[in-house]
Length: 271
Image (cartoon, rainbow, N blue to C red; front, side, top):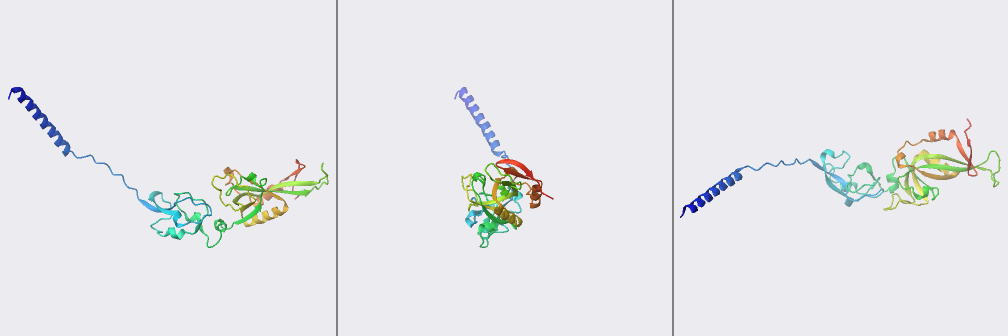
């Protein structure tokens, strides 16, 4: 064997030994430790499996249990560890407000009907549901929907105290005043909720949520003249509702008189 071959063989053996040493050192080196993410504690809460509409009777298949971070689980949520039979217990309840898919169920948003109709079930304590006739002209052109807020305006025709005759021989005065303010609309005709894709409900009857004393005001107004619903902006839907005393005080400051389509003067109350 010549010298060149011996040199090449020695170099090859040396390179192989170095490679073997490096590999053995890599195998013995401990792998870096990957930190394990801490698992947050969770609880099972009852949620809506499907969209639940206002006035809809809840069925067991409309509900399901869902894992929820324990730190953000409200005390109002229904938990599986405390109420494992909640799905069957809640079945038959009526939704007082619409519930979206995936929304946790709260007892405050449901009510047991106990054989009563859904309207009686969704009415808050102490409130009454009263219906009155409307038309496109008196119902904001059909753009009043359930859960909107309205003011109720009474328009009545009175004999002209001055006895003056108008261009048509008439002698009537037309008075208009707000008799109820910030009233919630429960339903239009028999629709307690907005239909899918529908942005207007042109009905003949509106059902309003009233206090007992407001029921009498509405009944008197219905007999005294014609009623018009004025739709309130959503921005002031939560404004403080004017009481009957406040409305009476405002009316005592003056009533606009419209004669032959033109404001004639302002009547002030006599004290």
